[in-house]
Amino acid sequence: MVRLNEIRAGEVAVEAPTAADAGLVFVGRIRTPWTDRLACPRQGRSDGPTCRIEVFAPWREALDGVALYARLEVLYWLHLSRRDLVRQSPASDGVARGTFSLRSPVRPNPIGTSIATLVRAEPGLLHVRGLDCLDGTPLLDIKPDRSLFTPLAPPQPGDAQAGDPPR
Ligand code: SAM
Image (cartoon, helix red, strand yellow):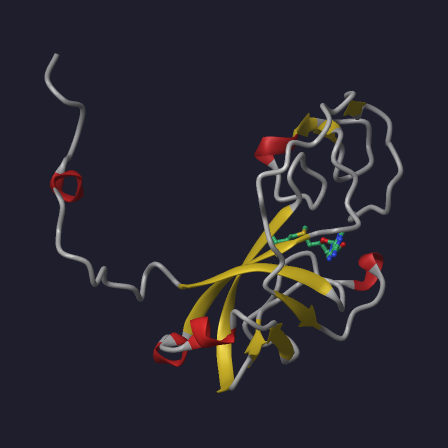
């Protein structure tokens, strides 16, 4: 079950190092129907409710071309998450797994990602389905779904590099 901030049997918290500033900026805000973490979907559904992604100035122009893609990868900052668990017990049954083997919102850098279906684009605003975050969750980034995206830049050598380089 999704958590608030409790520690469960079998879980391990560490003393997290002081955050170094990676220079992230919140480029917008996500508006959803959910105000309670325990009522949010654990993963967004493509037939879920329509949510709004509001992009702040000066980033609105960065939405140019987004409407070419039916699906978008949305990255957001799960701002209410604790960040210090290295082992977690999703079933709350004392059986704990490493954080990096889970899609839990509790992680050292609480970045959530979803593949969202684009419903409609307006200036500075996207209407999408497929999100699973609280109303007001900060937006980090938007990218075309990689399966729909063909690179526009000229090819470079690493693109065709398969396997390990010879020793
Ligand atoms: N789809 C994303 C992923 O896989 O990276 C997030 C999955 S995470 C399991 C979704 C859960 O995070 C929700 O059910 C809710 O309990 C919690 N959550 C949503 N918004 C949050 C926020 N702003 N801060 C902390 N937790 C949040």
